[in-house]
Image (cartoon, rainbow, N blue to C red; front, side):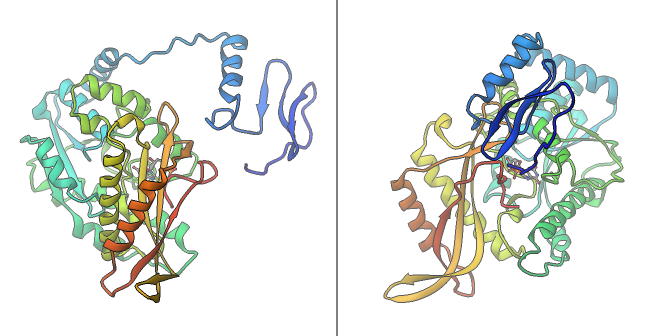
Length: 397
Ligand code: XMP
């Protein structure tokens, strides 16, 4: 899918497989093998068989990996205690499964008074999110910080030069959000609640976050979006685990069901789920449509395991022709994406998830009739994104 081509094989190597587009698609010298395709992707027919054969029949590995929550808890506790000692630490808790699990582990290891947890409301969260976590984690060592204005001031200063600027613009938005996030933790916002400055900041970074920021695919706000000179020691206790294992761990730790099964939500939230300049009004409209999408999905898929792994509606501020009442009308477009991830929930590859027609009808009708912009702009078209990752990503930017 990258269009790269191996034109000549090294000495001693022979070609094993080709496709009409690619002469050397799979090749080797009997010990080493090379593939110009993605055997690790779920959509690659036979990919898993190929990798299993290499690992277990040729390389002599044993398929004996199991994730043991008890062992992980004791090892990570020892690690945190050795590193942190008697100090207090800060924890960034979004209410998602990763950060909540990291927080729970730190409390077990260091004692609950030693972990000062903060939910930072950046203004790009889902409707009612702050209220939801307030009820879920009612605890003297968990605080909700409303930093919406700080984030808005920071991103309203990012220049948007017009259509086509999106790649650079949204990359900058991510970076600015990452910087502001650290500013909240190092500055007066969090300082208002604490009498001492703390050296460690705990985050729920998982293995996919690390892999994805290393490929340069995304500037994850909890990894690549952080400023270079961050003054904290960042503690990423879950960095070796995929979400699949983290959910097991969360269940073992007895976290609430809705936290254990929370769908992934990106750190920059709704700010990256649109085209064009990010405005408060657009973020508000996106939050409303996502609430509608959630309502419809919960009703049609009461069983957690049948739901798509992640889903959202993004706003396309492109005028298209519609027909409202008896008249021609112009309006914008909603873009719906639902994906299913692979079993480990790495999100490095995903498949698109198809909703049944009856559900699409209901959703379309609600999205087009219930939401309009302040200046009267309506939405007259809904498009469903049917691409796999790769070549597309989960988020629009
Ligand atoms: P992409 O869009 O890279 O997304 O295919 C893969 C997974 O990562 C989430 N994602 C993010 N999470 N900060 C985050 O914390 C980010 O900047 C970010 N960008 C994407 C995305 O929602 C999906 O689950």
